[in-house]
Image 1 (cartoon, rainbow, N blue to C red):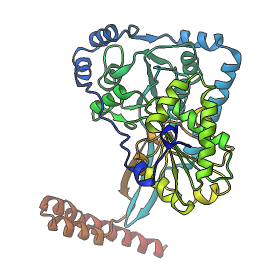
Image 2: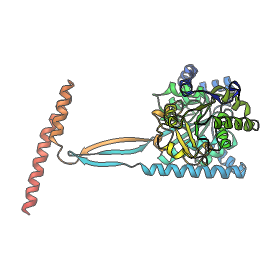
Image 3: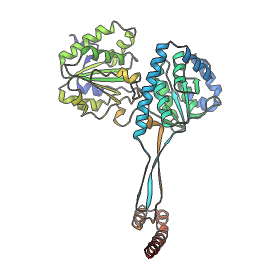
Image 4: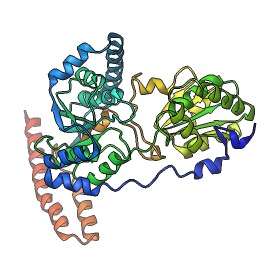
Length: 434
């Protein structure tokens, strides 16, 4: 095959690792500052400027009406997806617990406390994404978030229906960086939130970066990506379908095949070409593959290290070696083991979240989950006489740091500790006399 004509360009491991996937984000500081200063007036001006609908809060009756009116098979599919996402979220929540134990005279531990108010951004550019609404709203509800506000650039029947399914009572027809700024700083229309989650385009991502500090954000999302690691006994049709499913997202999406077999890479290339001809999204997928598609042929033993270094958003393992490879992998947004499970299932509600780290950030971060909406609050209280040895250790370390008030704050408690120990001894003696 002529390499220059390949949709999945043959590249080496070093080349695919060297590819720069991050690009400079647009400057949205002026928009963010305008919203912060002018509030709703700025939101209206931005909508007129960018040709968006006038900002509004959508009545809950409009959401319920849309849920009743959408095509029944779509409504049922959304309902079942919501149920599966909630089942997984509840299982996650049940796996995390409050903690309390006593040591050196102190009862200590932590409580898991939900964030009070969360903003959920739902893109509606090329396609409305009700699945992203489910992925943000349901784990937040399961975590116990008291107030959930959803922003989307254009409401559509399917977005409205998904909001109704999630029990959303606060939905705004408002998008772009101005929506992020409104959520972060608050306006008369949109009350301020504590955390903003959800994917968006480069302008939304830039706005999330700009407002961080005024509120929390989940992540700075880049273009979507998949790595499929497959041996030559995998099904080339399935591998090609998974690569194309990612490529059709966006011209900047990244789809990479890693395999020990050059012949298998050729077979996948042929399948990609065949399936591409049948796609209504072929233009987008072709542009994505031309810019970021790749096939990397490396020995089987090198695949785990390459996958860990790439730290992809989605990582699919296909072929007889899938389970063995999975045991050696550490960095990915989510992992699909075996050709029977597809990234498309994760996208549309098998259970785990589809809002995931991109651009290699899986090396240090996780995807959206119930944990995103929980804070870990530690506590300490006296459980008896505080250990004098621990008090003296605190004094020694404080003085080594030159912080005398800290040292005094420790030693002033030594007398209290001795009194409590003395009182406890007297009580123990009296109890023995009885």
